[in-house]
Amino acid sequence: MQKQETLTKNQKIILDLIEKSDQPLKAYSILFDVKKKGINAPLQVYRALNKLVKIGKIHKIESRNAFIACKNSKCQIAKATVFSICESCEDVTEIHDHKLSEHLRDFKDNKGMKYNKYNLEFFGLCKKCI
Amino acid sequence: MQKQETLTKNQKIILDLIEKSDQPLKAYSILFDVKKKGINAPLQVYRALNKLVKIGKIHKIESRNAFIACKNSKCQIAKATVFSICESCEDVTEIHDHKLSEHLRDFKDNKGMKYNKYNLEFFGLCKKCI
DNA sequence: TAACACTGTGTAATAATATAACATATTTAA
DNA sequence: TTAAATATGTTATATTATTACACAGTGTTA
Ligand SMILES: [Zn+2]
Ligand SMILES: [Zn+2]
Ligand SMILES: [Zn+2]
Ligand SMILES: [Zn+2]
Image (cartoon, each protein chain N blue to C red):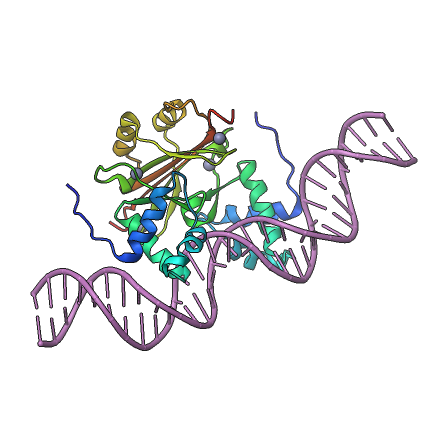
């Protein structure tokens, strides 16, 4: 089992907001939404986001500078992420594919590099947008 | 064969600079370096970068907001990128692994999404930094 | 040749994303 | 109970990227 983290007030407020959205949220849109809860500055948002990413509660979609909640309760998931992104409607889905995970986990380059994390983003058109 | 693109003056200047570096360069560092060649504004840099990315001459390292030259002459490579990134020295290497490419190319999710591109970034410690 | 689409340029202004620096408070652990 | 680690609130600033506008070159086509 993963160590259960106790979240602080700001972290809870921001995680709640992200979990209520099924799509990625951007930092300044989060800031706008949590102003009514007393969070006033970008740094307060980014500090919470960084912590939540670190403990795996949310993931950053690097190509979009946006943050999405992780629905997967498994350990280590923060260190092994796969997303599909529709380039038309911007719908983002986290992918958990056992076979793909295995391939990625077992990947070795020929440079002797030691990996502890990866992030994979697939781009295309979702069913609705094809 | 891929259609041979004719690059414009600005695009050539910026591609030259990126190709001379074996590591990713950031847009504003590129801007600083090409000012002596008459490129004065961020937008001139970003326009060239976007074009060069589009035609596959360079790739964007999404997690670093930086741009690296592609050494691979194969078609389609702009649409299927894999990088290893050292979190200590920030060394970035483009990976071309046939087996991995196959797995990624053949990946199908269960949502009927049609993919046309992917980007994979591995993070860890390189040989020197372990 | 003229009209048009398409691509690129140059410039200024601004938007969007993220961090530094500082003072203080709270929690955790030796 | 001191010290270390983590979090907070605030201001300012750094970094990354785009909008808007005027115009120039190139190729197509009517
Ligand atoms: Zn997840
Ligand atoms: Zn879509
Ligand atoms: Zn490449
Ligand atoms: Zn290294």
